[in-house]
Image (cartoon, rainbow, N blue to C red; front, side, top):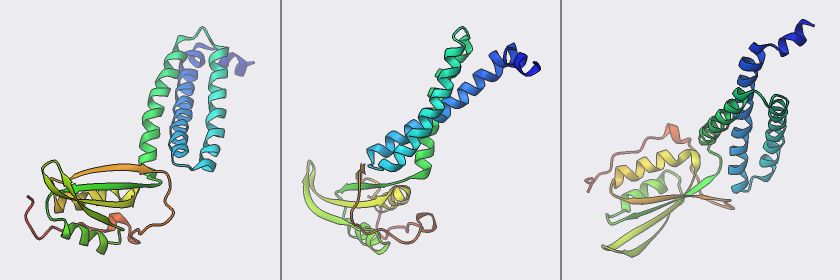
Length: 196
C-alpha cells in the first residue's frame, strides 16, 4: 500500500516522473539522431538496432504522459528532453566519427609540399590543375576517415592557411588509401616555405 501511495504522491508526479520523462526523451531522441545519421550513411543494420530501442523508450515515455495528461510538468520535461536529445546525439556521433568524408582543397599557392606530406603520411591524394576566378589553381581531393578530419585540416592550414576547402560526407567507400597510424599520434610539420 505504501508503494502504491508513493506513485500517487506529489513528489513522484511532479518531481520524479518529469525527470524520468526528461531522461527517457534524451535517450530516445539521441538514438533517433544517431539512427538518421546512420541511415544516411547506409548503415542499415546498425540503424535498425538503434530504431528498436528508440521506439521502445518512446513508447514507455508516451504511456506515462498519456496516463498523466493533467500534469503540465511532463510536457515541459518531454520538450526539454527532445531539445537536449538532439544536442547529445550530435555530440555522441561526433565522438564516434563513423564513416569517411571527401576533403576538397582549392589553392592558388604551390601545393607540392602539401600533396607530398599527405601522400607520405598514408593518405590517398588526387590532384589536378584548374582555372579559378582569379587565375590558375590546384584542386586536391582526399578521402579520409572522419576521425582524421581535424588532423588533415591542420596539415592544410600549416601548408596554406589561405586555401579554400570543403568537406562532404560520403555514403560508402569501396577502396581507398588510408594511413595505418592513428591520427592523434601524428604531428603536422611546419612547412618549409612562407604562409602566403
